[in-house]
Length: 182
Ligand SMILES: Cc1cc2nc3c(=O)[nH]c(=O)nc-3n(C[C@H](O)[C@H](O)[C@H](O)COP(=O)(O)O)c2cc1C
Image (tube, rainbow, N blue to C red; front, side):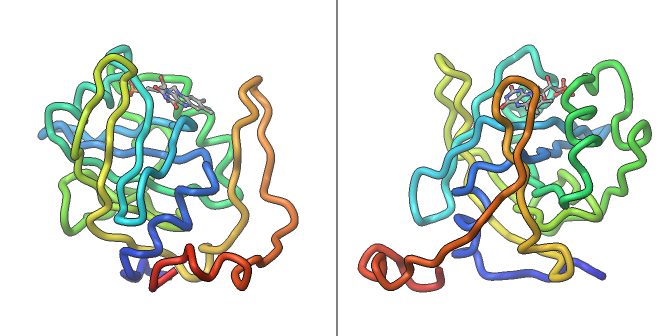
């Protein structure tokens, strides 16, 4: 099933749960991808923060190109997601090594990864160097309706991971806090 574009307002619903994500970059010659679990939304307008640092090739490429794609792994991608975060693109071509299929994005040069729940095309809107915070702004979202709304993986921080559990709706209680589109 192909990716289909969805409304930008939906960005928050992928980032607010704090899932483990894959972030792709393109340095002008080669695609690369890293794993990120330090991720947090900061407004309702599609801005969120990741924390990283110059020891990662992706961080340097992000600062240089000001673009990336944040991919939300499908449920069956945990092992690959962790392995991607255990090697640097400085040592190997991770797309080839992990058999990832790169698809063209529309608003950025970094690629989408086939088989994810959704991919958020992003531009870097700010960097807070002291903490390695990169503020990203979502420009376009595509999702695979077959896979999206699957469960998300979360890092515990000690090498273990949890999948989303029970879901409850408190939308009525929060209706004054929810902007249109959410
Ligand atoms: C589960 C997991 C979560 C990770 N989360 C982060 C993170 O939030 N920030 C970060 O800088 N690195 C994180 N990493 C490490 C990077 O993904 C790793 O250094 C990556 O291989 C960098 O690749 P690159 O040099 O090709 O950019 C994580 C790794 C794993 C396995």
